[in-house]
Length: 393
Ligand SMILES: *Cc1c(COP(=O)(O)O)cnc(C)c1O
Image (cartoon, rainbow, N blue to C red; front, side, top):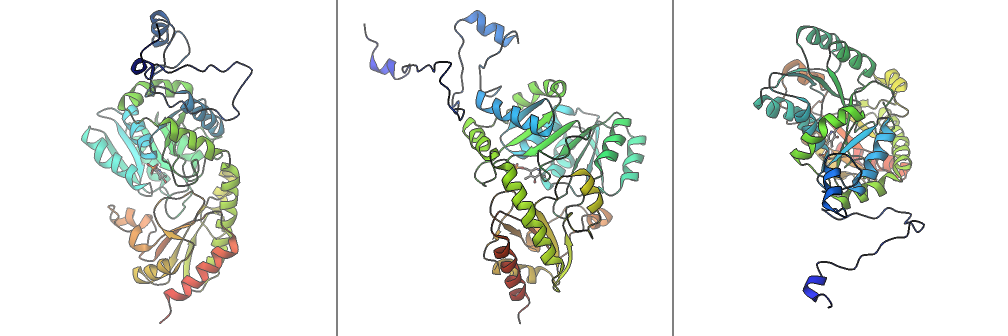
């Protein structure tokens, strides 16, 4: 007897691809559940005795392809994807720390990461020390005095592109038995893999997706470390949706082309700004005048796509400058194909005070630019015009 139609719509006809007929682009496995032929095989899978997929919060083929790709690019064995970059940060911190632990973080780190360590982890009894990323003697001292679970850092930093000494930080951390956790979002998957970083974190919202239309995050580490975190991370539940993973996978096809072009544009913009009379100081590691230039040359194959600078003047000139720009939208984030600007008004609101606040190098005139793939001459012309307008009487 033919099955009733209201049953059929819930058991649609199956299409099986012959093994020699393959899609060039992997399909989106937009399925929460996967099924084996019988319950014995299902149980074998659940006990880790066979390969397969069962439930998409734990694993999904579309996500798996992206995980393997990103792990390989970053030079590690395994990866866990998350629904945003901060989800990768928070899940990592929660999976690695327990009450009574101590972690080291830096004043120059991404704001939400500072929040997670200073507020959320503190509520769960995890202590922290906040240092400047320039203060590596301080880091050695703290690690010598206080048993530490992990050191969480970034390079280049946001927004003034300080370059962290990765060899020294990882060495200090390991000597003290701490893990080195590097949020490598700014530098990208192709950088820093040769340093003995234990966990790489990435916001896939930036260069991986590349087009400003999808969010994601990644935790990349050795097979062993990822295995030790997997249960906690999947149970915290920051799952990436398969459709988002598909879009990020597609974005990765042009990752190198975009990143190279953005870096080339950024260097030109930095050079243009450095020569401008209304600009006091330019922060871009590609400039020989940048304090981290030599270290950046050693550590990275390029200098990144963010250029910050101190405008002659303050918030008011910053507003006028940003408002006058035609090809730089006023917006947060970075790493997509279009150029963006964050004026001084939006870079303030910093919760750290005193010497650590000074170490961030953010002044009342600091502007951050995220450089896209537009024609370089259009960008410098736009900047030139907007600088003129910012100071027109
Ligand atoms: C953007 C960013 C994040 C957070 O990523 P989301 O995808 O926005 O959650 C984390 N770290 C750094 C360095 C970032 O730039």
